Image 1 (spheres, rainbow, N blue to C red):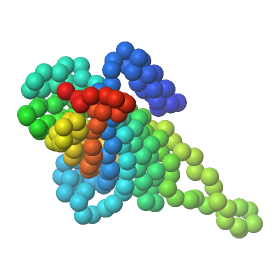
Image 2 (cartoon, one colour):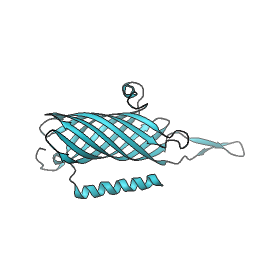
Image 3 (tube, one colour):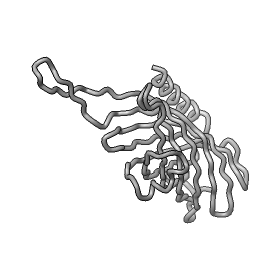
Image 4 (cartoon, rainbow, N blue to C red):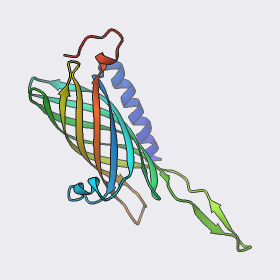
Length: 205
């Protein structure tokens, strides 16, 4: 129940912020999720496992200076881990970005809601000795996130191509047995200023 409350709270926060703060961009990223210890498992995202995902995000700046900015991002994602789960997330990140002429370097900390859909079937033997499929319910869970990234502005419309490395902790994965499931996540994506999506909009500044 507490994770469902968290999910509702996250939706309420996104809606209230949207009503008061102009959202500056929308971004899309392709992901690869690898179960491994944080940081030391980073190289494995390139060769050991392939668990695909997609992340869509938006956000705004609390502070925006020529050399740095403090931002709030709202993200939703879906990823597939074969035999384990399909997971849907809704979370927010508070981040810092250092800027040069065309490059940006970001670190962000966040958390939110993860909905787990089990990826395997289960069977139970009845009194006649027959095996019957048992429906495994999906489970609401929490998640924590720490991410670091680099981006580059491309073209005259200030679109940004980015690479981001994320540590994601899913909890409680199996209550009483596996309290935390760590993922190392690689994001490859593009961020598009909102002004570029509006009909007749001018180039972003």
